[in-house]
Length: 434
Ligand SMILES: O=P(O)(O)OC[C@H]1O[C@H](O)[C@H](O)[C@@H](O)[C@@H]1O
Image 1 (cartoon, rainbow, N blue to C red):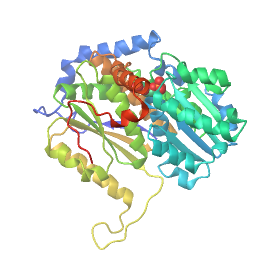
Image 2 (image 1 turned 120 degrees about the horizontal axis):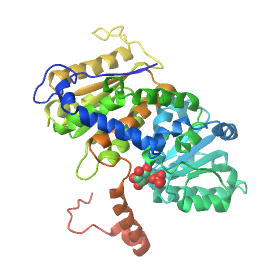
Image 3 (image 1 turned 30 degrees about the horizontal axis):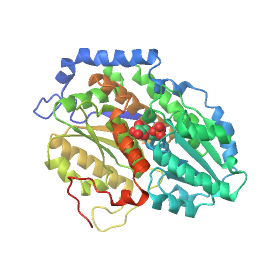
Image 4 (image 1 turned 90 degrees about the vertical axis):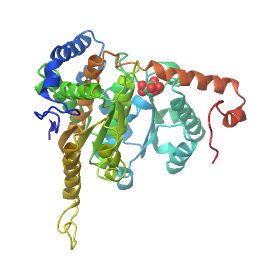
């Protein structure tokens, strides 16, 4: 059960106009060492809480796990870093059809789409549902909106509604509501950024109620932490992968494609997308994360990756052992092959053709996808992001640019009469009405 990083087309001795070679590393040796030292110094200064929380006591969640056994459903309400990590781990371990295969149903309310909220509330018996409302700021509109709708419904169907609600918030309106109503609640350390918070109560509180082995999850993160505290780049996968992406970025690779060849890692891709975009998209700098799923997106995006702008670097994630497999009977080359052999061959074929086409690509190979290895994978990317921020000399831990849209939204909601917002069109902009 291990993660290894193979650098296809990266560590070759070839130096060519698109490639990356050892010489590129030698040229920035001091910069790499400085980036490593700065991350470790920030950790010592207690600025990087995500590197500390994996050593916190997790026994506090075992009472919640027992408590959750009385419920048939779990609903998690949150946005961004308050829900994407939990979804990535839940789906990464349990798969995408868990609800169809098990009595306990798990739903994620991660948007302000009225149809999604309505349909989930229509499926579940709210009285038998444990609801997690998660928001570090406690003021995220979508989270508050969904929570207030569910809270009102619960108040209408049971006087014991307080038993159905767990809040994870440090401050803001959600924390005030939890204090006023006396809801069960958990905090997260202030020095842990939202998109780095899945190993805090943000993820561990709901996950321990979803039959996820949070002990194995944290063990995986700790194992990866040992590797990432090694100054030798050739023994530190996060520092190495950050450096590869940094060198690639400086060679014009402004798009980072993550391409797992297993459906269970699609939500992990969405978590990575926020982590990478929001952490390094600063001051006119940024490497756009794109999520592709193998093998199916070979049929939708590979033409662009192979023959379009040479502005991408691709990371394949391959899982060697699937939970199940199926044999193919056929008169052609597929005969007596299994689906796992097919998808592994497709990944290898894509990797080799991209390499032949001088598209830099990296492989992360996971023996078996479970709590331990997804814990390693998530922590790997958290550390890679921290190192990348230092290499790019930007602050990887804030997101100042997202506030503008929220202020305008709030103004609209406060000032515009209800029915006008739907009609209001942004001026000076081409609109297509369908
Ligand atoms: O956890 P919350 O305070 O609700 O924030 C949820 C998300 O929304 C914010 O706008 C930020 O873009 C994200 O970094 C954050 O994870």
